[in-house]
Amino acid sequence: MVDLFEIVDSLFNKEKYKKIPKKDIEKEYFMIMRILSNKMPVTINNLDTVGTNKIAVIDHMATILGNNYRSKPQWAYIPSFKKDKNGVHGKLEPLEKKYKSILIDKLEMGSVDYDDWKRTDPDDLLEVYKSMDEQEKKLKKELN
Image 1 (cartoon, one colour):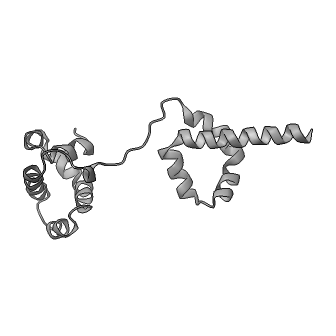
Image 2: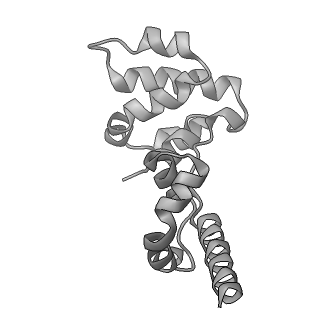
Image 3: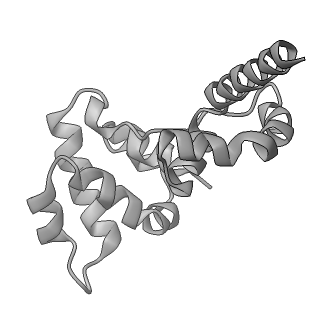
């Protein structure tokens, strides 16, 4: 089974594309078309009609892209999320319970934005929570 990243990479290389199983291409059809529509919306819209052969459409696009690009262009890169290497999510939980509502109110962000921040850059969020925790400790010392 080939993932979406490999399929998109292979669209710009004819030899790699020939090795990709057709069932994987068909499975990822919607996402492939979505990525390609960022650069070529009219072409993709014309090709993506009800009843079209999905594999034939992707084969056609692979031929066009393979002929026009020598390597994968910048617009075809898929944004990815940072992985939790250091167990940041485990460190976030106690601080999150304490400061999440304060942070959301202070930054005037919605819960969707907060969840996106937590998913894409947990290290940055942890740093913000740590600074909030340090500020709280300093205030407690000053008041005592």
